[in-house]
Amino acid sequence: MMEEVRKYKIDEIPQGTFIKSINNKPLAVFIVPGLVGFAMLFGSWKLRIFGLMFIVFTAFVYMKFKKRNVVDIYEEFFLIYDADNLVTLIKWPEVKTWDLKVSSNAEDQLFIELHDGNFYEIAMFGIGKVSVHFRKFAFEANHREQVKARENARGSSMRFGRKKRD
Image (tube, rainbow, N blue to C red):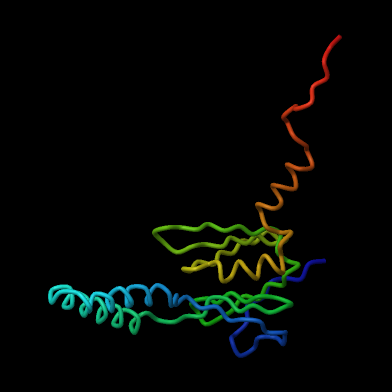
């Protein structure tokens, strides 16, 4: 029988082999504009002013952007953080399917379906940091891999080597 998914307070998380904590503050999103602004400092005086404004704006947004834990990865389970300072503990064998939706203009999403029928969603920029661990611990539950396996089991619908009729 499958174990029920439980919510815990952050200080009540059960023991496990901790691997990584993943947050929503993508450093590259702030480094790139900062470097562009820095490169502008070597141009004309108008470009220097614009570059300085670019750097100041990037630094301001970086300081105002709240760092929030999204997921903690353990060998035995993973934790999804809620807005209420609670975490949802899900053991890796509980995952029935998972799939990614990468967006170019909004947060990326990881959709998780459990064997008990519950659905969870992890939304953050740079979802690849989380999906690496899902590929490691729940690869067979990946929706796309399951579709490929079903297609391979059915065989090809194309006929390449048709026998000639006499």
